[in-house]
Length: 103
Image 1 (cartoon, rainbow, N blue to C red):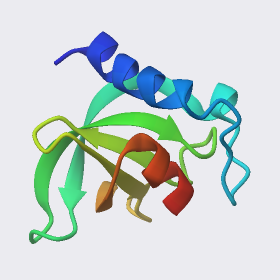
Image 2: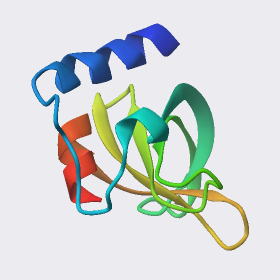
Image 3: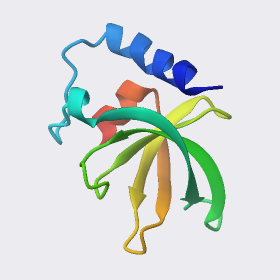
Image 4: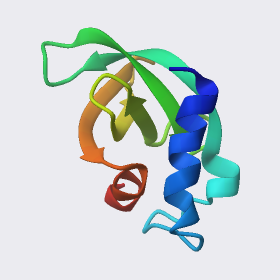
């Protein structure tokens, strides 16, 4: 899987939800980023390291929520940056749209 594959998954979902917003006021034009594969600590599995695609950052400084994509499970979920500047995976929500609504 590559960057374009991940972008296409999101693009397909957004076609059916053109006016999508969430309670956090996330502006997709500003918050969607070029997908980048990063190492997260898995909060459900003794903080073992897992590689996930980061596709959205709630804030420009990177301190808000992050939407991630796990290509192994074909699911989107949320991540955060810890107070130690570590990326932490905090759970799956399903699709990109479901994850955005769950923020």
